[in-house]
Image 1 (tube, helix red, strand yellow):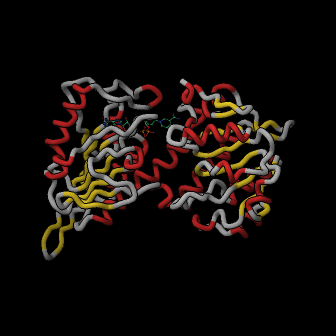
Image 2 (cartoon, helix red, strand yellow; image 1 turned 90 degrees about the horizontal axis):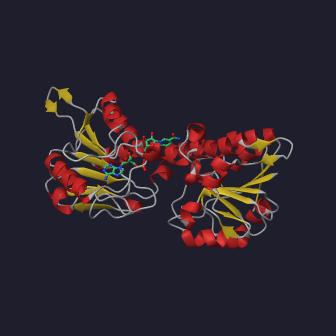
Image 3 (tube, helix red, strand yellow; image 1 turned 60 degrees about the vertical axis):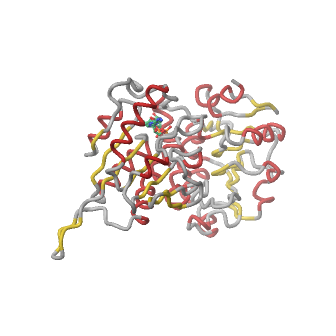
Length: 373
Ligand code: NAD
């Protein structure tokens, strides 16, 4: 089995889908690994390091030739996949809802496209979950990005010249990214509060030493929610949440928003009028900006200023920590493929529970229920 590792082509994508560590492990499984020249450069991995781990390093055509599995961080342009084996697997973050037309093109090419963001949220798949591994780093980086834009300090400091007060930080959406944002802001010395629609997060917020701010008069989502995912909330809940946020946000210096609903636009959590109530110099980081944004006025790829408040909308935040993000992403892919490796066949053979969840295309057709349904 030949595994090809492509150099990412999307603007701003600095990550890579395999590291020398995972190359070595694939080779130990009996696979042949080919890495496209320069694939690891932006994640601080030299071609020589891949070669030392046992990969061949070469141009794209040679890398793809006869590959039964192609690895990527993001879905590659279908036109650039010529040469891979018939029915070969494409294993990457394929953004299936956002890039629906491209999924059809993968099908037409005869590629079996496996979307890693469709990994089911079951215990045995945790180590294969790219959404979690990347969201964790995003939550951390969001707080550092906020700190960098903020013209004041995060921790309380008592100095001979007087006291600097601690920043107040509010985290909206307490999934993987939000939990890491809370922990990071706490480590920097901020006073942290947080909110979510799922009641199970209340205890998690408290256990990190932050204050839960929750809608009390309208029921949210009991417990974890299905698969840990939120759904769109009722108009009644949204109204109660808006009132709660209005009362809280004016007293905050830093707001980090991370709220997402799978397959839907991100919920709008902060209006322009609410931004206007914050004191000048405050900073909002919208991690959902590429999914439509939690914050009115946020612009993907830009840091803008509204009413004296900076609204940070960086794209592809995990890529801003490319070395660590790649290391975790690469391990997710290795954990996935190795868990299903069939020694006799010398290739992975998926089971129905995980295979049917991640498989988008097969035998020239789109086969995934979430795309067909
Ligand atoms: P996510 O990225 O889909 O959403 C981020 C957060 O935003 C979620 O906590 C969600 O409840 C929240 N949110 C959505 N709409 C909101 C709104 N209107 N207002 C406020 N908050 C809103 O979620 P995630 O980070 O991927 O994970 C969520 C949960 O799933 C976590 O509890 C996590 O532990 C669990 N999880 C389990 C597994 C597994 O078992 N394999 C893997 C990953 C995540």
